[in-house]
Amino acid sequence: MKYFFRIYTGSHYQRIFLLIFSLLIFSPGKAQKYFFDNYGVEEGLSSSKVYTIFQDHNDLVWLGTEAGLSRFDGKEFKDFTSEQGMSENGVFAIMEDSHDNLWFGHLDGGITRYDGHHFEVIRFDSLTINGDITSFTETQDHKIWITTSASGALLVENPFGPVGKMKVRQYLGRKGLSDQIFNAYMSKNYRYFCLSDVGVHLYIPEKDSFEIFILKPFTHYFMKTCMLEDREGNLWFGTYHGGLYEYSKKRDTLRIFDSKRDGLAHNWISCLLEDNQGTLWVGTWGGGITRIRNGKLKTYNNTNGLQDNFIKCLVEDHEGNILIGTQYHGMSIFKGEEFIVIDKGDGLSNSTVSASIRVRTMPIGLVPTKELRFMILLKNRISGSIIIPARKTALRISFVLL
Image (cartoon, rainbow, N blue to C red; front, side, top):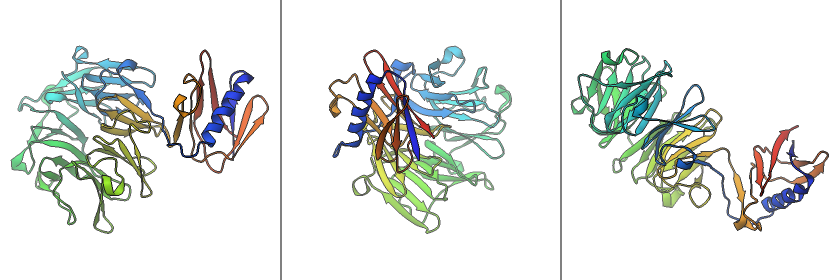
């Protein structure tokens, strides 16, 4: 395959490009660094603490933060609070239902519904919610489960009706469920799970109650914090200081990934994501992110490009980018596999000249062509762009597939 770079500035920039590209190719022993786009308060985000991220059907990205709600259109943020009609306090959970309404779960029990034009505060006459709203899940028959950190689970039977006429059922200890629910998950065959302080609970529709979910090889020493079913039907469980569990449905076996033994970023798992390529992303609390692909683990943390080691959530957007909500540094976006960042610490004389390039395999040739083009011959695929900011003018190099 042949790929071409086009340089959009004067020919004297060719020397800069060749120098930087030679550094990319001939830097043996250099520790790999990765590039993340970072968005915080300075970029307009309402708070640097991001609890949850969701991309809606219009490609808008909604971020629940400690301060409330932010919406990102790819260029700028717009913030929403109680002044726009929302419930008070920060937003901890977000879901879009089958009618394209957005549901926002707040700290201290508030619930807001958004129809695309107006915010409505949801209140239930029959009960008071204590604690935070921790998740929303729509069922196959279009009811909505709501979990809380102190009031168990709620099932809204008519979630699309008027605010004052919603019917809701509460599930607590008598229904086989704890008051404290940290997370919930709907499997591919519509089995509904709640993760609580006392274990994993499975909803049994025939009994209208929950039962403790037990797998034969399961260990019960560590609290389960998150859950995921991958495309092969395997179940993954994140734990509190117990590492990552993989239950193989075919083999009926349990594998435990540990930070010291296996290279997991940390043994406190905060969130899980399987992307559209079948790669598993593991967010941890204190160690950054581990990517598991074809049985191999790779960690991203604050030593190789990720700003924050405390990960609140992981989401894949409609373009395949990984959106990362963090505790202290807002949102980071990872747009590709291997980004290399070259700056003053890598041997350049001035940090005002830098470059980043994403490659899957290193180039084996660089050939100048007409119209300030450079042809790169590759063994495999390459995608992305190089931007070289200088003092006054930026050199932009984009890839053209021929």
